[in-house]
Image (cartoon, rainbow, N blue to C red; front, side):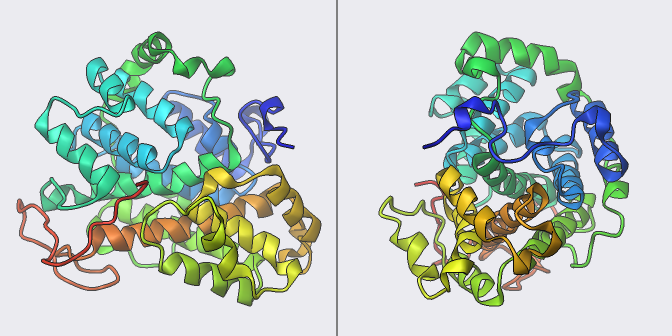
Amino acid sequence: MDTTRNRGQFRYVTPVPPDAATGRVADVYRQLAEDFGMARMAVFQTLSPAPEVLAATWALLRETLLTGDVSRTGKEVVALGVSLANRCPFCVAAHTTLLHATGDHRLAETVAAGGVPDDPGHARLLAWAKERGPAPFPAEHAPEYVGTALTFHFVNRIASALLTENLLPGNLQRSRLVRSAGGRVMARTVRRRLPAGAGLPLIAGLGGRPAPGWAGRTPAGVAYAALCTVADDGGDLLSAAARAAVAGAVAVWDGEHPPMSGARLDGPLAGLPPAERPAARLALLTALAPYRVTDADVAAWRGTATGTAGASGGGDAALVRIIAYGAMLATERAEALITAGLPLTGYAGGGRRSERGQTYSRSSGSSSPNFGR
């Protein structure tokens, strides 16, 4: 039986309260309150048992969505489009409210209702975020638009796996009037310009990978590389065989939602010893269908979380790390699908960066996966 409705926003993790936070967690909470205008944000609170994951996730969101030269409205359209494609009602409600905060109330409700924006530019961004295809922006905007899309491929999975749909008590976010009022409250914070790079001190020492080609030499690339590194470390909580099985299944994922039969989720894990399957199942569910993570899945993992989980056992920090590992596998797969055929350097598959001011286009014959279809 699913008992999550009695837990408020949080399903399986007890967050570190802001007034009890120390070190990296306290630093993230402080910057989050200053830059986002909210002292408590459930997505980040649920990551707080794993400070490195928390810091890298926040830094990536900050350096893609909150800073830069691209319109915040356009980036919120991308964030909302990705969230719709990934079937994440928590994030859909949040970014509908944030679109209201940009001042475009009609756009917010049109997109949330599944409609097409009146503005052709917003319509192209929404289609790209939901379905992929030729990217409707110039090359120099890739760090912000591609970065925002990948941020929410990751964040959507965290929210779907570890949070309920209750952005607000009693699901008040379902009310258009409440969303509009919430947007007005946040309007001043959302519309201000923030300096780029201020999130990077929070992830000092967490990097390890080179920044991706789509990010150029921007803080977004540094933050993305750090999140890839710390999320990948969560794979150490799986056995080598389980990690290979999960990674192999995600590597051939086409961006579609798995059928409800479960064969695509259970088949890759069938050859694992029973004790290794719960951790692998959590990671794979998070990657491909995070909204299917249940109480039973988490309980099964907690009951077997010994050995490879080490001293952390089946605690909250280990759970966050496994969920982050699965979320990042899917995000990196989405990155490969998004950038396939684009003239970029530095990402898997090679290529070259287009000249400044030229829009990206796919190479002829490349597929266009429909995330969420």
